[in-house]
Image (cartoon, rainbow, N blue to C red):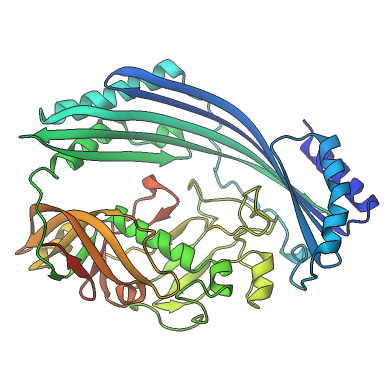
Length: 449
């Protein structure tokens, strides 16, 4: 299919019907998922899907058309029907396509597509079986698997608008995941691990993944509830990444504008420790969040979100850049069912220099967190949170016994301000949002026994 010609025809048709500005997003996605459970094939799913988002603008009003196909006749009929709905809307000065000077595709290879042939089902099945086998062989207490699976997707993304912009790129993602159960004296604990990458060959191998999942399950056996109190807390790099993901929502321009964020009206203020610097950078080669332009065709750019504790930027699309009088940040999403979606790219906390082992050794008594639950249990307007957690007690600079079934509570700004150490162990093999381990020395209450 000639996507450029298809988009051009739709734009011309919309113009003839009186639409002043048009933007078209076309996505073709192929996916494959293979799962096994305890050495047996569980499921194989392959799919090809088409989706489109067409934004129509007239007299500072807009209308969204979404289709799960590229049926030109149906799209043109929907454009015709949109005219009556546009008349009913209220004009909004912020509604427009991005300025032409902001449109473009970053030159240079970002390596966001694996161009090699997708591995065969038989190859994947063998790797998944080995993954489970390596978990079982790690320790006899690993009794069974909850499943191991592989997921592949390739997205072909095309954007065009009536200002003359056209851009396209392809993006791939590979994922291995395994979850196993350890059992001893009737107690059962689950451990999981995964690896994500643009390139299949860059995924962590089946031995590492199987052993890591087994280790994470095994070390939870014999866990206790900690005593209620306030402790220094170390978040490992996986749980710290969950916190950074929450921050990406709190600096979302829509949430900031609607005052649904603790960071509303705090741009330029100190909201964290001087060691807190967070970037949103879609221009790093070979990372999953990389892209040459965003969901509106705005060329990609890196930016500081938090800079030495100061809130330096929100992430915005064109609409909310105008609403907030904020510079555009190239963070429009590629969602096809929302007209003004915003999403981060590679969003990460800049690492420090201390080794995690040395950091643990510096804590006389504290908590080491390896799992967070219900991380959406946060009052986004105030920053107050209460999350379920699991991990280990730290005693005399060493991990002692495992702990579980407790909560951690505090405020997200206090957490940022009380972060006194950042490790060097950032890891982009778990997704496009990443963080090293961090030490928060006060302000977090543990709810245990």
